[in-house]
Image (tube, rainbow, N blue to C red; front, top):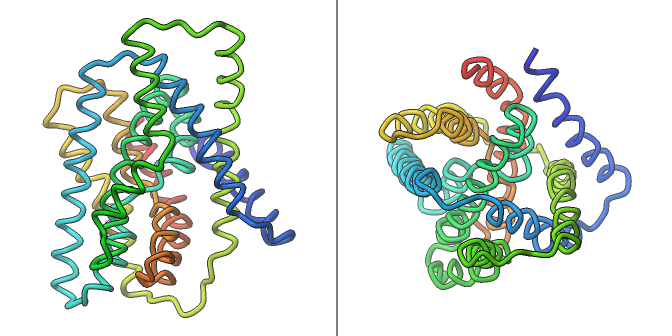
Length: 297
């Protein structure tokens, strides 16, 4: 059964991080910094160093952009229908347009489709991080130098630099000595379990008091249902690998990205709503992802 083979092992790791945080109340910032600046950077470098540039990567970029634009449009139309003000619209945007393809999506793909699917997932994760660094910061910081902050955020992400360096190494056929590559690989292998634990720890810090059920219901429908449907329709426009299509659709069905909650806190874009959306969509995704994985078998 897919739930026990794919979803449950991932949830148990999240639960470990959740319990750890509830008991010890650790400072998440240094752990997150380690994951972003060292572990994830090594994972991204290893992936792009090993993966040749081809049309599939081009399709990943195009499909990811079209999906983001589509979700932004859907959310803006929804916000207008419900007469949300700019702050409410921004909070809704952070909850719907950006998915947790990193510390939730990549492990699900690894358990479901193995190394081949995982390599696609890491490539998608990197591009999603760039999109979130630009559009996510912009919507969170509306009227506060959003574009400038977004550019700074992108430039600060070491994984983006790792992509460039890895591609240059590959294109110029620069071979990394085996012992050095093993060191990079060792660090890269730690990335996924650590970021999974971090998500569990982040969820432990989310308060479930005073939830705005109407807004959260709308955000959940867009994030967990409309997003994968839109991704599937966009994928039909391109001659992509069937495995890549499945990975793109499943990642599109991931819950709200935990990173957006940090953006909301930083720029005071209704952080309680965004954090609640991360929690609610993560819980609900257990059912929606199980169903979707069955559907795509």
